[in-house]
Image (tube, rainbow, N blue to C red; front, side):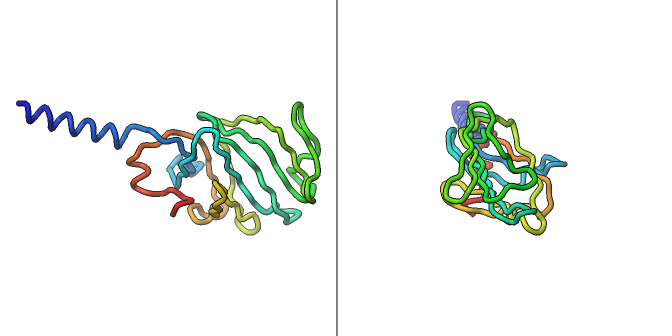
Length: 168
């Protein structure tokens, strides 16, 4: 009886350790199905960037975000040329300036529960940058696909089975 209890307890503890969500991660899901495509473990307060080439003026755009609980907080956007979709002034509490040939809108504090993004087919070449490491979205998602990016906790099992996009 004691052995059965210990075995059951061991199984339950192992399952809890493996399957209870413990680490925060950026999740990349297919927009239509919600199927998990990839993840990137990230700590609360850690920054990440999405870098891409603007489809009209064909110059780099870098958006900087911060992970905060279950929200993604946009902190800045930097780009070389004005064009479709690029801001031309600052909102309340934000700062718009030119730094080293780039227009920078910073001191932003825009909160999002998720980001919906359509990966570029030809020009954009979206990349995720975390801790200085770049990873093209095309390495885990089809060009032209719709991705939903959000923050959630994942389990050690999810981490062990792979899919961490920057460390692959």
